[in-house]
Length: 329
Image (cartoon, rainbow, N blue to C red; front, side, top):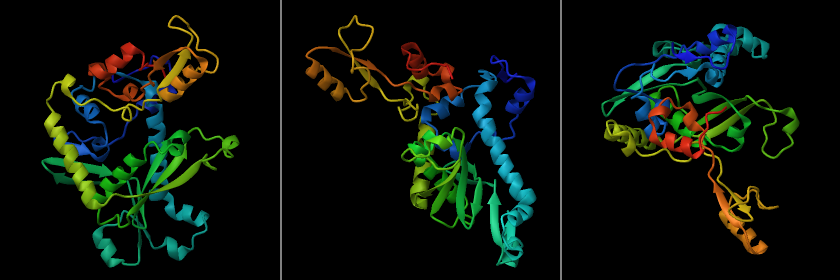
């Protein structure tokens, strides 16, 4: 048994959530493009945990299962029905006839006027003793695209732009024959979009949105890959308590809050002193009031909940003890 079902989900949903068709690679020197972007501590400790050592509750797989289902649907729509679907969208037959899905190099040479479209192709390269691989979502007109099923918050706050850029850059490093352009696109599919909020600043005006980004130069990308591999080699067998700790950004830590109380024994913050994100503002408030005690409430960390190495990570256990990490939701 790999999953628990403490949430009591019905079998009809449980079977869908338990399904996993990802093409895992068990070579000891293999590393995926997405793994290169993980915090070093998470990557190393996760490899020390046996698959059956920590059972995941099935409810935690809902976001990844939704994302996989949408990816699979897009892939099937293109590979199995692109002609019919392009006709529905009004494309002329002469254009549709030129489209080729995942064409071989020989086909491209024999059909120079074809329009190549690539989906879910895995590529790999060996570097510094490691096999680096990655499977992009979509390439059209020489531009790589990634489909992201996520919250509106991720788009509005650009929380993952740097990771998106490096992921796309690694795909180009792996596929220089297919990815010809120096820009990429994230195709957001929002899970929590609300039409009533579209008048708010920066709120997306529709449920899907294309977000364009510039890729890193190929030389810079390769330097990043080699540096990450060097760090993995260096810390691979280092004791857990000597590994570099995950940063606040890695941990998806929310903002630290400062509250002003009448004194140390007070249970409620004074009026107007209940929430400061800048300690200097809280100190200014105390000076204006003439008295008061500032208490610090560290931001909550969330990423640990989704790390399979949490049980053997002293950093995570420290946050559990302090209350900065909870296992709810």
